[in-house]
Length: 94
Image (cartoon, rainbow, N blue to C red; front, top):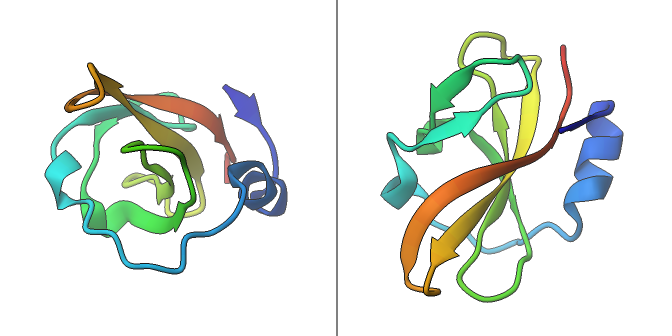
């Protein structure tokens, strides 16, 4: 995972998706946080969504232990229909 400041993290994420996406389908799924721990994803941690291709989702989430730490995560699917896991791409360490 790459570490950077929040401005660079937003730039790394790409184009922000202006549409609302309900991410509650991923609630409870683990992701590797920039703080070094593994946390369960909950849609209330989702800071913003970004444009991706296909069914994938890319989002910046805040750490439940430290609100100043953010992680850019992307969904990965099996056979393009079944959620498999999150990939942590980059983060900040507040």
